[in-house]
Image (tube, rainbow, N blue to C red; front, side):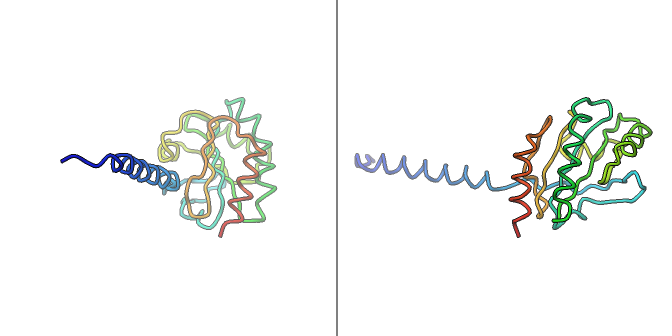
Length: 169
């Protein structure tokens, strides 16, 4: 069977349109933050399900990471700027970081947010086998990972994105 000449370009356009639509829809589907339990330095037990309805910044870091130490004042400033509006932060210390070093760092810097020690590496594993520090995830109110930063984020751009996420219902 031979197709009329005008039909081939129309068929090609239809196939391209469907492919484009599918590609666009895949961009809209966001990965969900994993369900994981962790313990904060103060001994409280937390589950990521408790983040529902908040915009969360999850920062994987280590006291031996110079970039982590350098960016921490900006992480603190970001937390302070948005905390009254439904934003929260958790700093997850890597499994290789000595707990005494983490506790000392958190105390000396007066970190105003939860600090978790990921002794077993389970939290880093659940977030996609995080190995590089700093690695930071921005999570929306629905528990979807909106952005992953490996290395120090552009904090001005991060603040703009946090503003957008806080404005969402």
